[in-house]
Amino acid sequence: MPREISAGIIIYKREKDRDGKIETKYLLLYHGRGYWNFPKGKLESGERSVQAALREVAEETGIADRSLSLESNFRVTDKYIYQWEGQKIFKIVIFFLAQAVKPEVKVSNEHEGYGWFLHKDAQKLLRHHNSRSILKKAHEYLRGKSIQRRPSPPPRP
Image (tube, rainbow, N blue to C red):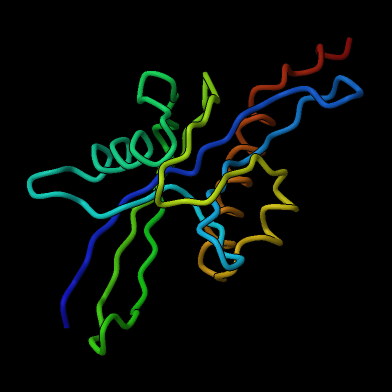
């Protein structure tokens, strides 16, 4: 069975809501026919997964690598089999997580649109269980990270 390796990035941004509370939103690209997903694509010859992920993000969203802050401790691999022109293909997708420092998106011609969504809304839009699971892992990673950043309460006398 042929094997295909791709890489992508779950991109998020943080912004204040109407009440001034910081919220996290995730970037999803719209492919048409109700299909939303993260920016990703195949590795080119000699390319490392993180290089491919950054290249694909730039191609599909216009967001350059200098406008992203990669989370160095997050990497998730998705594996599945799909069929293309009557042939089964074993697909491996490596996902990274990055904060968009400059979240200005210019979507490519291969997509019909994009959106920034809260976790619960993005979960509803993602069609595949694997994609929802990966987003959940990213969201839990970021929640855990923000809990670790909170200052400790002062010691009691």
